[in-house]
Length: 161
Image 1 (tube, rainbow, N blue to C red):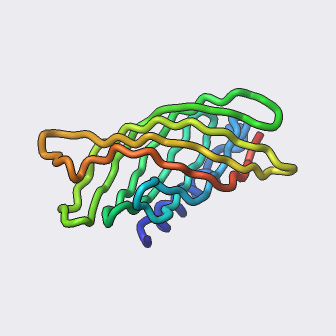
Image 2 (tube, helix red, strand yellow):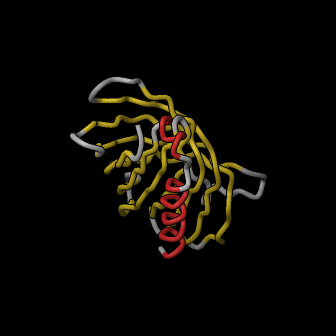
């Protein structure tokens, strides 16, 4: 949890370092819970949207196995006034530990689809579904592979545009 907090603070700080003229891209911070159905306890996610790019961190726990992901997505949003549906794909790294397996870091691919719902002011709600896929060399065992669908929702704060 301490690592998650440190990385979250780094994401928020990185948004404040964006040059003022880059805010025309649209800078937003997303925070919220997430879960993987079937034996999961709620996890957490944080993301910073910088135009079409979205670096993220997230953590899930399912059936005694903890998965911590860090990466980035390329997001395409429809520019509608109130509800903004989006889809995207990206990658990163996934650390899998617990459940009697040794802790290991894997390469990760993810697909995401969701929508932002604008509220008055600089706040919005978001909901998204994410498919998470880890892969690597032949060292992966079936128990440590992650092939899951995650549901995430929360609050988005717009810092620009």
